[in-house]
Length: 305
Ligand SMILES: C[S@@+](CC[C@H](N)C(=O)[O-])C[C@H]1O[C@@H](n2cnc3c(N)ncnc32)[C@H](O)[C@@H]1O
Image: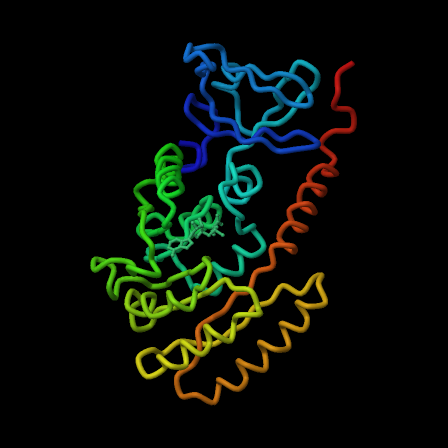
């Protein structure tokens, strides 16, 4: 339950982040785990600094130093940011720099109702949950059965299930369901062919709600056309967000999108907020974060001889 409230000490069942100079690991605090034969055995977590007896974490303070067989590390309480850097990847994920911009563009506040598709690995979902709690709710959809199921199990084991519902559904074919018509303050789409989801999103969004779409630049004009075609029914506002760090093509994309959006501001109904993510940039950013952490000065001499 370590995702739910800030706490001082580690309890059995918490997820903790083990911070080592060269890596971060998410560990579920279970004294015993099943081995390949299905027998319960001592839970010993292996790292490049040796083994950690997970049982020994129970009762330790968050932020404290823990001993490993060949070194030491620190145990941190998980945050959405740390979780994005350590979660088990079932898909490509969105990282903190992009998540920050998405939360900003969605105008979320505590109490907001937000819809997300697809759930993927639940990286963004953790950021959304923190923003809308304690009274809001995230409805997250994925058409991949296993991903939807594992995500729901993860939210439950993190103590977050009051704030999130994970559903298995092809939202492009079936929409978000009758119970969500006109209920969402915001919808976020991160899936292939997102333009096909725009009419469903519009059905689910309140009249003053927001739609944000993560999309590669080369197909952005298709989505824009769909929205323009719907402009009589929706009143949405225009923004474009680009991460212009690396690729030359991204710069070109930025110019193209600006031109498109500029043309569209002549329409009486304005366009949705677009967030175009570049995974290359995200990966670089993660690398940068890891590097920064490893030079954080916590450990001049970590390895025991
Ligand atoms: C890139 S991942 C989303 C990653 C997620 N934003 C995160 O940060 O972890 C895209 C997800 O969309 C799902 N998806 C693709 N098409 C879909 C559809 N028509 N309906 C629902 N989910 C869909 C895929 O199964 C995949 O899990």
